[in-house]
Length: 188
Picture 1 (cartoon, rainbow, N blue to C red):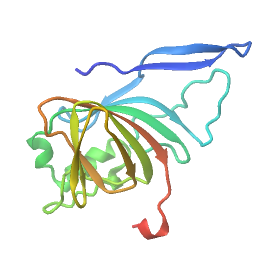
Picture 2 (spheres, rainbow, N blue to C red):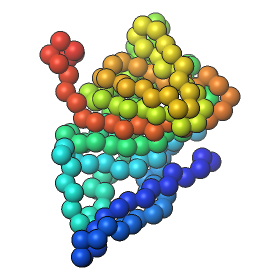
Picture 3 (cartoon, rainbow, N blue to C red):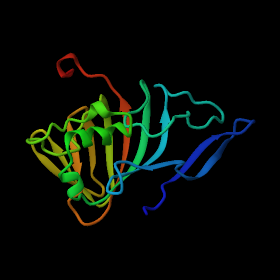
């Protein structure tokens, strides 16, 4: 079991003074892809940019866990990614698509079978800031790969990529996802 992600939300009281509105564990937590898959801790989302800043509303309601942020919005999540095992290394393209379908993004999967760099390669129309909090991950691109460790920050710009935890310990990484739009030359 991974440790909870604490979420502190600020707001305003009836007089307009700043208050702590919520303080507790992130309310939506779900493991994706079965026992060897990552644990998603959904921290917050916004439905538009600029985000509406009002007195005391909460996080906009969403059903389930979604990979990408809402259209025109943002999302922050923490992922606990366990060490990779053979279940991921031998995953079929259909299993990879089903894995992403669990987060509403079956079409994001780029696994095509033999010759794919990693079973969980995917692409979203977002800019993502990934901040490694604990452990390490290998970021796999169509060409090349790099190991990122605690304190490193990845700026993911709508590129096809995969994450592999090749260590023997959990990796915790925070992602801030911002809805984007592909330039015409990058649309598939």
